[in-house]
Amino acid sequence: MAKAIDASHFGEIMEQWKKDCLECDDQHGADVIADVILQLDDMPTLTPPNEPLTIEQLREMDGEPVWIVDIGPHKWYGPGWAIVERDNCLVRTAKNWSPVFFERYGEQWLAYRRLPEGEDK
Image 1 (tube, rainbow, N blue to C red):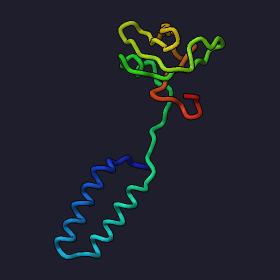
Image 2 (image 1 turned 90 degrees about the horizontal axis):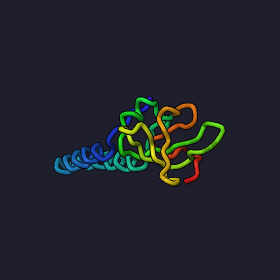
Image 3 (image 1 turned 90 degrees about the vertical axis):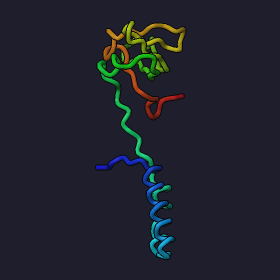
Image 4 (image 1 turned 120 degrees about the horizontal axis):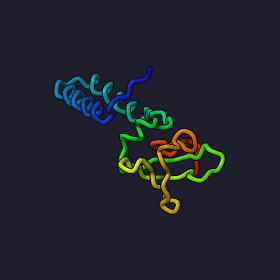
């Protein structure tokens, strides 16, 4: 199982250790730490899964963008970006600023925090 870390913070710690090694005339230690820093810069980033939001997650959002996708037969809503309006229980799409109501969530449409892989931008 992978564990996400703050690579910038870890890099700062490594830089301090490298500096400490050089102050103690430990060139080998400093070289090893420099290699670790280079490896850290080349590590791939972890992208969290982009599962459809639950209705509960959607209800906690307000004023935030979501990517919506039609799953109903009519394809009225998306795909496209929309803004959540929690107080009105809807999202407003960029297409004609039309409302998409929460009550149809999971039946007619789904929302994602970001553009799903493979979708057109």
